[in-house]
Image 1 (cartoon, each protein chain N blue to C red):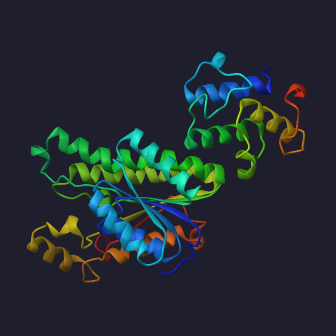
Image 2: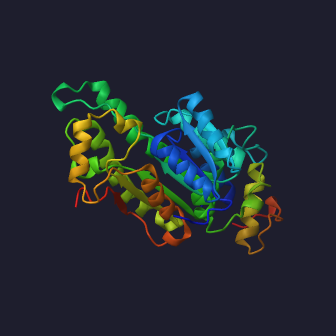
Image 3: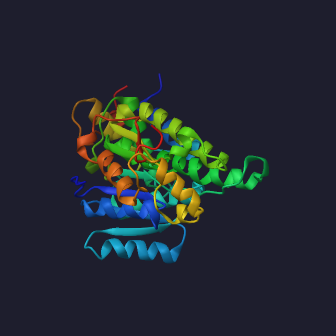
Length: 92
Length: 248
């Protein structure tokens, strides 16, 4: 089964028409990949649907890198939304 | 018609004159911040000024609604400026009236591009922030020409009938995200678009209209306000005809 990181990178790559190997945890979604407001809105919807979580607008504004997405999802899935989880300890 | 649209952000395509301008002004008068989309810089400036002069907030955007690139750029710019989009009014429309047998390919294509592709592009783009917000109002301006047909308007009536189908499908797809999609189908409304019609035609239409008068922009704007307001939050996929009873 794909990890959270793999799923997140897959969604981002599909949305932005990029190759998966272009994207790593440290990739800045806007600066490095050129995502605009519409791209980000669409990706956030897909993250919400894929992981069955809610990403509040205030939280979304703190999401810059792929790692921010992954850690936010891990935290939300663990029922401790706020994006504080360590990416390295992501639950499978 | 009064509804509470305070702090709502509305996008109105074709908002520089006629029905679109009336809708933009009505939304603003009810508290909305309005992004006016048009193609003519001078008319756009005048439209925005007509709204800001009342103390309401408005911003103008030049955009060809049939261009994917321009639509996405415009919607991004609206989001940069206002942070959200609550209401989208797909109003931009053109006519190229010609009898079917003499209609040129371009006359068909241009009308379909603006009147049908435009609403698709704007709906696709604006539905993203709306889906994120899990609320939104999309109001498409179609026409009785799309319901009953009209001589010389094969292109226009096809585009407006298409917009009705689009409204119904979009309402089903977006309902799960608490976004309503409805349409207003004006009959004969006094605007620049209809002022070019022959006087005899206008007189005949008036006599056939049960309510005995030509429609005004405010009549259409009132229907849009209704769909935009909280009071209509259980209504979606509907086509509201505003024609003085003409096609009943």
